[in-house]
Figure 1 (cartoon, rainbow, N blue to C red):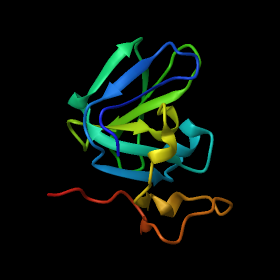
Figure 2 (cartoon, helix red, strand yellow):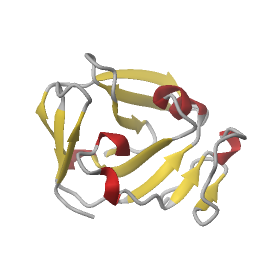
Figure 3 (cartoon, rainbow, N blue to C red):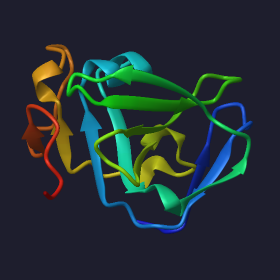
Figure 4 (cartoon, rainbow, N blue to C red):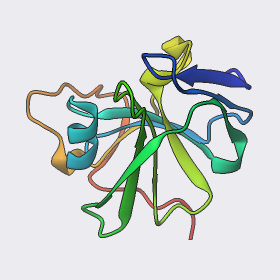
Length: 140
């Protein structure tokens, strides 16, 4: 996993760089990620929020009440709509970077599928990945 790594939106209005190694990489199958990605899941990399630096532009955020009852925020480009970032009220100081926004997404290796209780029956899940029916608890 390369650090630093960089990425941005489809139109180039937003560019970012992350100086930290990923904490975890996974596929989220919750309904909010399905809606925001336009697909069966959202592939994302969890990193410390402080390690992400915007080099150009600014993401627009939309907040929703997630299935967990927490507030989930999705950051996207206000010009082209590309999904870039996500966070939620239970993971203070952490953020998710959408894998498709990476300049080189080939190194993304998901470790788990989460919120599989919401997965669509037409969406194939790699049987070798760990499965969590909801959001796993990260520490106490």
